[in-house]
Picture 1: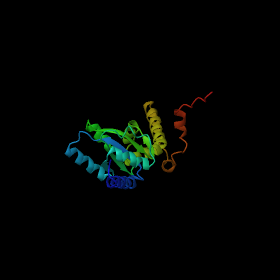
Picture 2 (picture 1 turned 90 degrees about the horizontal axis):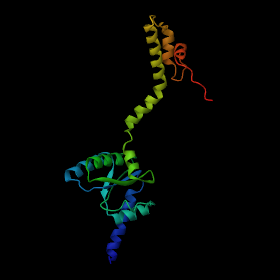
Picture 3 (picture 1 turned 45 degrees about the vertical axis):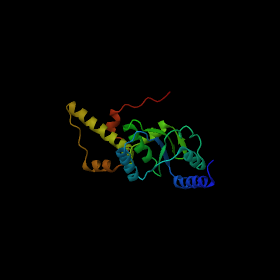
Picture 4 (picture 1 turned 60 degrees about the horizontal axis):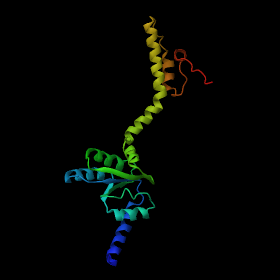
Length: 204
């Protein structure tokens, strides 16, 4: 039976880890079998650069720590060698650890906790595939600009069609061009475009 000194040391370790891990947005649990020293060093360096903390912790300690944090349903996760990557960043732990688990065959994702909810391996992998913030911003910007872009494409198509039929598309006065350029994306399409686009049949 462990002495009181050993039990006290374990309890202190649990309290320290509970305090350290508390408040993270994402936790990703991995089996780190098969990593060479070079691979482990490279992975830890990338995690540190992204602000992700990474520790190999005994399962008995992990069970107590996450029980203290109020999480259940992790018994199967805490089997075999387990390491945890965690951060305030929602995506970084999943993205980096999933990348290395894909490249290093013995290493594998075991599960995780995402924004306060226990997550499956598939959910962690799905989170790892979310685009970087810069890419997301580009996609949002494209979505906002799409109506105007579509309008411009339709105008161009109408002009090209008129040219193919032997007539030149009338040039708009400079004042009209300027007004259309400054109009919001929600502005109505020109009459020529409306004529070229068939009206939708109302739903019965």
